[in-house]
Image (cartoon, rainbow, N blue to C red; front, side, top):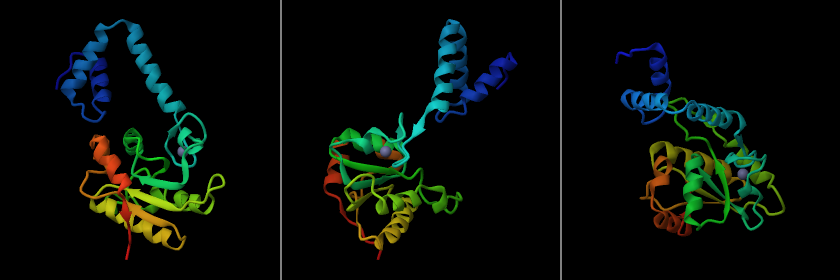
Length: 206
Ligand code: ZN
């Protein structure tokens, strides 16, 4: 693609780094921004910059949070004995939207993938085990629910975590298979997802 100006080319290149945005769309957005009053692009730049600099992650569950400990982990009516393990932040939002789950979460930040070089150290697995040994508050953790993608990587991760949890005497369960989890969890309809959490089954790594 040839550009009439280096400034436009730079903007198109940056915008097209976003997922799902090709060069054509990026060019359309760039030209659109050029036509808007300057205040529009200024506030967009400011919002993105603030988002990156000021976003914090809960130090317990690694969900996005405005405070050190997120509102879910602090929730007075939450069942602190339950931890639902998910691949990433959109999965927390999807499960929260079902209103069927009242426990806590643990965001791994990915799944194990030897091909992509993602090992246990790259994920928040150690901090999950720490939470089992050192519960935040009075209640011990009694059950860990695995809501991981039904892919090979998701299965490997579930197996690995279950092995690690085995010595700790915690019940491990998994949400019903057959529904898309992980990257697609956010698109699953709320009723199906909510039901699969309620009807979760025991998980065994044997
Ligand atoms: Zn939290």
